[in-house]
Image 1 (cartoon, rainbow, N blue to C red):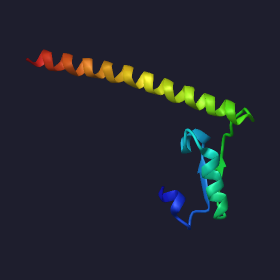
Image 2: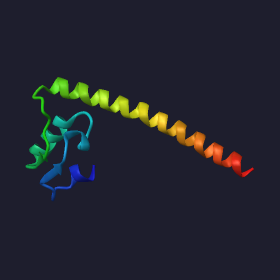
Image 3: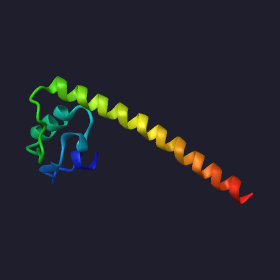
Image 4: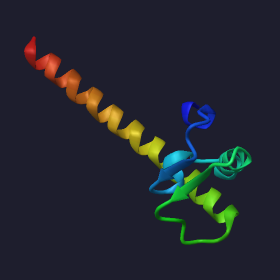
Length: 87
């Protein structure tokens, strides 16, 4: 929010679109353009279809949540095992 509301910032540089936001990239770009700014994406998406890009973002987000839950369960089990070994 600080980047979007700071009038001194004219260009925001990101490596990939999803590093800035998973959804609504075009809304943020239009907001910046309305104040004379822009977003530079170093590695643009390979597809030119916005719907496909949004679909890939949804799948990526859901996959990250699934793997995050798996890792959290694994870490909790390791912590529990360490605590039981200390007893």
